Length: 590
Figure 1 (tube, rainbow, N blue to C red):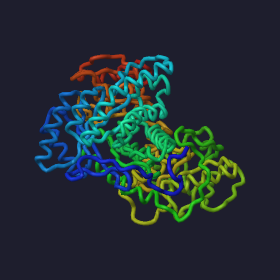
Figure 2 (spheres, helix red, strand yellow):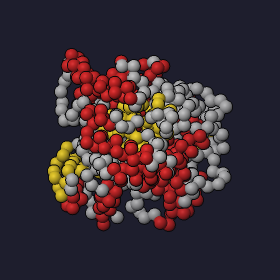
Figure 3 (cartoon, helix red, strand yellow):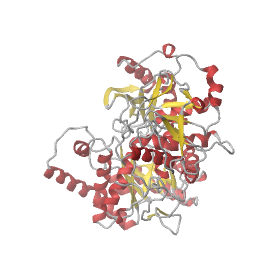
Figure 4 (spheres, one colour):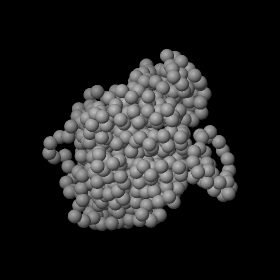
């Protein structure tokens, strides 16, 4: 199954153009050869018209081209009329997306007022009960008929009014019916979306796009690759546009790294017509990250004159780490085989951080690049390697993008029948003006995260970032975000929206202050039940808004504490972590 024209040479996926809004008054075409569109979402109550207008204008001022507003009820959806009227009165023509979960009636109301309606197939017609049930083929088909009866009226209304749809599945919020047949898998996400697309197509409605979002960048990448491969199999007229995003990425550096891995790697493969960086921060902070990511893609996916189209070493939709032999980097420390992915640093970084390393620090250099016995090759040329335990990398100075270079190196090793461990580099040239810290972080995350998500790499070397401490920390943060290594607490935190039942930024900061020392623990912080137990996916513990001022606590996907007053909830979360043997006092951790 192919998800892009080439894994070595950049070519943007050719999609059909869809119409967003009225082209004569602020609307635009999305897809095809059009530039990638940047979007974000409001964080306020949809019934607060003045605040919705204010936040929309703030987003447009920083370059947001598509604004999403949640509509949890028919009443909220009806208020979209007032919001849109006020925006247009202020000469703001930005198209609005209504975000719908659970309420087909709200979708029907919203379609009367906004340019795009986003529905989640996992909960548009199905309630989420985590029920286990075996469906016969007849029962399954009957459920599909029921879904069509619920969804078809929205399709017809959108067709009549010239609206667009976003069919957006989320990892962990699939219906019980899909879960029982396909599991909580990329395949389940794709099939769920295709069911709704077929209903639209039977009514000759094609003005829609897809999204496949997950808080895990690796899962998100697998989903989009599988989706595009399936669309290509279905036929050339299934070339619908794609919206990219890593949902619940969190805040700060971690949120940006996760987003860069998921969104950036797919953009480098030519996928994506619109993007959103989901941060647990003020929404306008998301747009500069979108801008920076989009600006870097041409440099990271530059088209070489020629590249051998060798068989790939990885599949499009099922992660599997490349099999390699073990190699000793330093005395008693190995990479490759079953060993974790190692962090290598330059001698300059080592000299800058060595005096600050304490004996039990987790974040520490594991080898010095200049001291390694590493074979450096140009992957475009034939080369020989005499044993599988020789560490190998792409030599500096190759005028080919790093992602393509390491994919080509892996393919050549496979053709030679070799299992050599590979040292990944985030760049193949260290000449020129140093990057800013922000650009260095995004570039390193896109390159290394993309390759790690392919299953390639046994050690990594970060050189885009010139600060010694920042370079070392960035390497470890990329490994954690890519799911390759866990050296600190991992957080899944949704961005705020009108459904949120507490201040996400404040609470996330409070939880981090109490728990950031817990290595290997994953905590989800969800503003409401929509982004609750399902979308927490593989989190160990969950802090979820259950009602205004009330919090529910989860272990995995199971609720275990209900209606806890918000002022007590962080303490109760710590107690729950302690009860399950995951707590370590900060002094002991230090």
